[in-house]
Image (cartoon, rainbow, N blue to C red; front, side, top):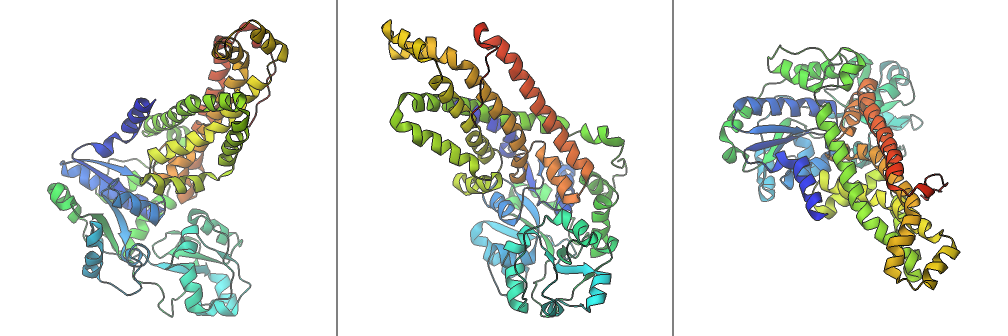
Length: 502
C-alpha cells in the first residue's frame, strides 16, 4: 500500500522532482494565470530546462508556502504583497530592502515587469455619481452601501481590516465573494462596492469608478518575480531568458492581455503566446466539445482518476478493518464510528487548509490525505452495519459448529456482509470523484483545475468543461461498481436490499 501511494505521488508530481525542471506557480486570478503562462513559455524557449506551470494554486499564503518549500521555483508577485502579507512589514521598502528581508528565507524578488497592479475599491459610475462618492473617505458617510469583497481581501492586513481602521469605516465585514464573480454582482446591482485590481479589464467594461485612496493606505504593488534564491545559479540560461521580461509590460498592455482572456474568450496559454509573438494560435473556440476535449484533457483525467483511485484504495485497506474492529470490540465501536463521522462534517477547503501545514506541502499529498479521510465513513459504517445485520441464527450456527472467530469472519461473516461493504466502497468512490475537484485549489490538478479557471474568468463554458467530465467519471465509477456487484458477490446476495450507511 505504501509503495502504491509513493508511486502515485511520483507519477502525479514527477515533473517537480526531475533535474533541470523549472516549476512556475500562479495564483487564482486572471492576471496571475497569464503571467504564469508567459514565464513558463519564456523558460521553455530557453531550452535549458523543462518548464511546467502549476496554475491557480490559491491565495498568497498557499503559493508562498509552495515557493518556500521548493515545490515551485518562481511565481509573479507584487511588491506591496511581499511587503505587507509575506514579510508583515508596515514600512515601505524598495526592491533592495525587500531582498534583504527575503534573504533569510532563501528567496529573492526581481525582474520588475514594468507595471503596477494596485488594490482599489470600485463602484458603478452611476451609483457613485448619485451618492457623490469619489474617494474611499466618502464611503464613511454611507453606512448602508453593500460591500462585495473577495475572501483574500477580507483576510489580508493590507485589505479590509486595515482599510476599515485607516478610514474609520462603519460597515460590517461582509461575507466573502469570489473575485471572478464580483463584477457580475456589481453589474447586477447586488452589491455597491467591490475590491478590484487596477489592471482588471472589467473595470472599463462595466463602467466602474475606482475610488481614490486619499489617505494612501495601499502600498505600491509593482509586479515582479518572486523566486528561490538559487534559481539564477541553477538555471543560468533560463534566468537570462526570464530577465528579458524586465519592463516588458505597462499598465495598458496588461489590461489588454487580461481583456483577451476575460472579454474575448481566449485561453491563458493563447494570450501568453500572442504576447510573446507566436501568432500560430487560434482563438479559443470550436464549440463546447473543443473546450471539453482540449489538449489538457488527458492529463487532467489521469490526475483525477489517480487521486480518486489511490485515496480509495487506502481507505478500503484501512476502513474495512476499522469496521470489523467496531463490530468485534464494543468498547471501540463508539470511538471508531464517531471519529469517521466527525471527519465527514469538516468542510473540504478547511480540511485541505489544515493538512497543508501538517504535511508541509501543497498539491498531491494533502489532497490524497483529505480524500482518504472523506472516503472512510461510508466504508467503515457499511462494514460495521453489514456484519451487525447478519441474522443471529447464522452466527450462532457457526459458533455451535466450533468454528474459530477468524475463520467465521473470513468464510461466513465477510461474504454475508460483502454487499453492504461494496455498497459503502461505491458510495465513497462516487463522493471522492466530486470532492477531488476541490483538490485543484491546492495545486493537485484534476478536472477541478478547469473549474477554478472558470471561476476566475466567470466563464460558464470553462466551468462546464470541468464539471461535465467529473460528473461523467462519477457515473462511470457507479456503473463499474454495479458490474462489480455481479462478479464479486455470491449469487444469493445479489438481489438483497442493502441500506447505505453514510
